[in-house]
Image (tube, rainbow, N blue to C red; front, side):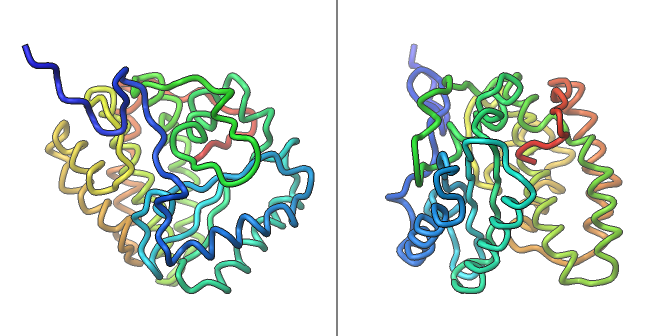
Length: 278
């Protein structure tokens, strides 16, 4: 009997492999990566434990003028409000300097929290499997290997119901400004597609970060919602500022997905500060 084909994103033992590498960074984005590598030690000094890239740039799929720079920064202690202001200012400066990118998103956490038991299948998994080392000692060496199972699904995206009220507040805050709504459509679209994918990930038994592929995998298990998820995947790549789209996310697709996720995998354990990779 022939062995079943290995799913994408897994090694021969069925563990998730790390996606992305510095070698895959497109030439157009290499000066940006170099600038981040140079500037982060200036901002945090000896308090910087390590820094990572994630997203389309280290996967080699970034689009000039469309993709953002995604950074994950780990400090030796918990970050302060001043640290968050500093990293925000760094991102704004880099966004203004490099027209190749459309914004900078930075996740900032302390080493102790990242290595804590509650984060074992959330922040720690994120670093071990979705982040590419840029600076410092790679924390993946201190972390377990991961399988695409129900535990991982629950602890990564099993908190959508808690996010929906915040999303409604952000939609109201955006008002009638189309330019303010477009980033919300992109963010929420990506979040919903990734949540839909991890809902079915244990059955599919593999991993991908490609939004279109995620939507396609989800649609094979939930054909009645497939069209919605395919549309969300497209808006995650090319967002619009349509308020109808946002309302459909918080009034229809989002609540349904949160309920189905809880039914299949349960809900994510609350974090002390209510935050996660989001």
